[in-house]
Image 1 (spheres, rainbow, N blue to C red):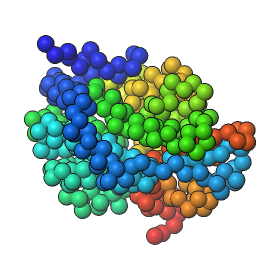
Image 2: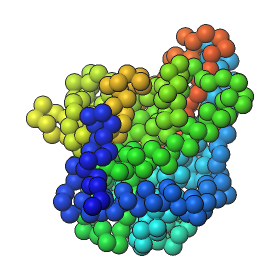
Image 3: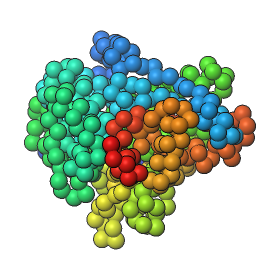
Length: 400
């Protein structure tokens, strides 16, 4: 008898499979298919070929010389995930899950999206493989990510507006899971981040760990040693777990995850789950046990962030485990700090970063000057900021 997925999928006490009974056969199917998929040399060869020739991997590790000189202290390298096809790290996982869906005989993909990057990536993979695709997106996010909504439409995908709750990523996940529970025979839900019920946190981690594998190889080639610090933004947590995973056993490498501080912790308008927050406590959200923002009655709290991709009430369960174990340090950057870092990277390196990635850059702005000269900091630049120009302009009061 096949082992049920409910017995797997824990990171310490976090994770698990908290899903409706109607979804359990689908989750078992995904688990067993993924195990076979990862061992199938033919499909792995096709995946590798797509990553290189379609996706554009490996992405460069770039020494940010002017930013380094501006800040002083550590040498700053940028892992240029913004140079992936579609402009973010999301395409790597989307291609993997689309191939997995085809491997299972599914004809349709669904997904949730906040910043729109996973939506665009999934729409791209669906177009490439000739699959039907629907993307669920909160109406607040649709407004502030208008370019990505149009890109999804151009790719032949239907963007389904979600007007419930806070009208952001949490609510989009809710609707996508409702869809999947009704359409599991023909549909694969391509989770965009390292969250949800088992096996999705593991699947997304495995597909995105190529970021860290490339980074380790590249920094050893350039510096002949590992970095002192690696920094990544954390919403659900896929880009962070992707770059962190190959370094987890390298205890001298400090790993830092940066959450969305929004208007500040005192305002309760933020998305801070793992740094001290009055709203953060353990609970179940979207199929797994993790840290979740909740009010005093245990209701899921709405969030606030200038970056749509970090605007999420929960966090991937492995991040909760890494927080409690102390292996990863989690902190936050406010909207204002992220926007200042966004402008600094534009002006000093000619790179327009995603607002999500700008939270990681904000950590460097504050902490790189405090590190000894000659130390090394790597920032995972998870995406490019074309999608965010309207949000930034609105924030600055500029009409474009």
